Image 1 (tube, rainbow, N blue to C red):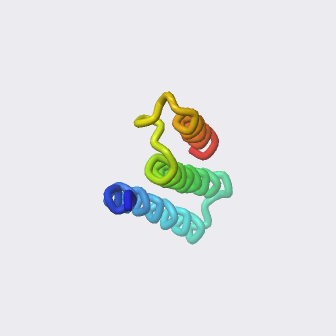
Image 2 (cartoon, one colour):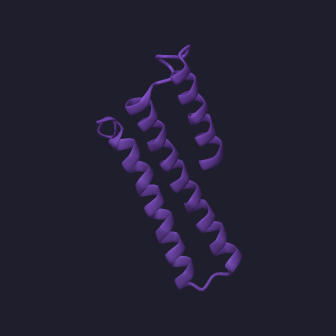
Amino acid sequence: MHTIKDKNKLIARLRRIKGQAEAVERALEAELGCADILMLVASMRGAVNGLTAEVMEDHIRHHIVDPDTEPNSKRGKGAGELIEVLRTYIK
């Protein structure tokens, strides 16, 4: 499974997200202002979206079709377009 190959990278991302969640918790406990908390939550949401996009892109490349190995096929072009859409709208 490809996620095993990228396990350390994905776990590092997840640990950063965990740290961000802990920062939100500390901010709530310290009763920081809404704007500060919203900034922390937005940062965490961006990190989760980045992780989601990375896993989805890897899934497309390893389980559907890798556009790098089939750049001229209809499926390869479609997969490449899908990956670009994911990068644009999820990250």
